[in-house]
Image 1 (cartoon, rainbow, N blue to C red):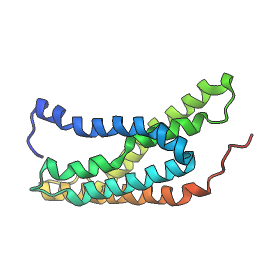
Image 2 (image 1 turned 180 degrees about the horizontal axis):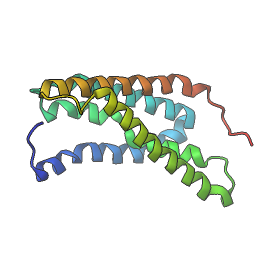
Image 3 (image 1 turned 180 degrees about the vertical axis):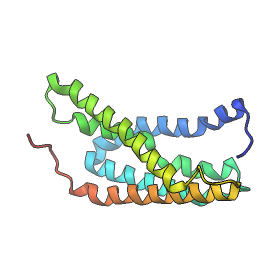
Image 4 (image 1 turned 90 degrees about the horizontal axis):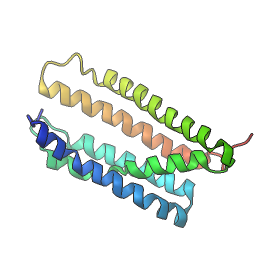
Length: 164
């Protein structure tokens, strides 16, 4: 919608990529200090806030710069790091590959299914105007915000260790 060419689009992806990298690097330190459950709950809360910020910043005549604060708050890198750490926690060494593979598969399938649902909610195949596309995308982002927030609310109730 912003009419970016390939180079400018690639440069625009640098901000979220740098935010993801920074959060990935911080996740280990935060987990050591606060524990995995608190770190994951905090990461989810930030992710929900960041997603809402991106949704609120979207406008037909909006700018990329308006989206940057939301991208920075998202903290996706922390969530990814914490998720894979939690998947491997308490797993015997000879089962680490299976645990990692299951976490990777869940992340990929969940992302694909989640994206398909959000695109359906956005109704992106039905819109013919920029305003309708932005409105649909904003709605989908608010649904994602609610899902992340719900996960943050229920995550403290998850068991500390998996039972066998």
